[in-house]
Image (cartoon, rainbow over all chains, first blue to last red; front, side, top):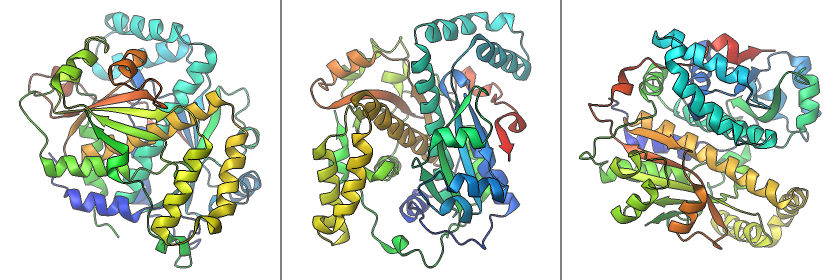
Length: 215
Length: 215
């Protein structure tokens, strides 16, 4: 269905790097931002549960507060956009119920007909401790991070994934306490500054042969 | 840098779905597979540690053994390619050492000059219990899963991410026990069968307004 050239995709993935210094004056256009936002929404997740909320931090005061909890990484305030990826802290009956209702609504069926699927999800979740449910949700959020950074690269947009942050402080600043969601990871998005010397360093990965094995 | 059209990327992401039935006769070309494999290798990870190995299962006997541990999901044997994503079970001194050596080799510097970076990684890892280190590695693997599925969609290749598998049995079948790596997730890759009725169902996601919040 797609006529995108493999070499074009690879050159985008080779071009991307964890941007240290963003051009604070260069903003992502509304059209490109809309596409990036939709790439988040379209992320696949286990059973389709989408156990996440993506917070796009526009308020400069909030960005400065977050910067103070991010080991001083100025990407938080300088990048065009800054997204905090949050994960549901649990998978509760209401999450499964809401999802099955949404499925039936969009697919034009009844929640009753989706009873077997609901049972499968409930059975799976019942086997997980609360902490394991949170870990499971966080892993789904990382699929979103991957899809987001890949999409950005292909659209010529720079990113910097950020785990180096005080998640508890983020939760407090963003009003997430008692919300059922917690900060998992963040990503600064925008355009590299011409002064970012790290852009010129060669990309370093292990050799294909040491990470890919054919069996 | 890229002139890829946002609408082309979005149409690929809307086109993709968790393929239930693959066309067992249709194989991914070597050129496209090489690109998909490189997308795995290029995946970003925390500190660049790449705490993973990607196993591409070609042997049909091994595929059948894995199928028996995958809730009967025939994607395991029918898809053109089947990738098992494994994560390092720990982050040991040797992992950090190997990474710093690789960095210095490719970037043309000495491991000594990278001492401060090494200290930062060691300090971060020292703060994590063994189990937390494994969770951390698994999250990185999910970035790879996201990048891989997104790249595949853009290249017109179907995927089915699979968490529904007996990871312990996979580890046994694949000889991972005592290897320092463990099965995290798998992904079937290939082309949808014209008989896969689930392809025709509308894609279901929550409304953007309920998963994306501007602050």
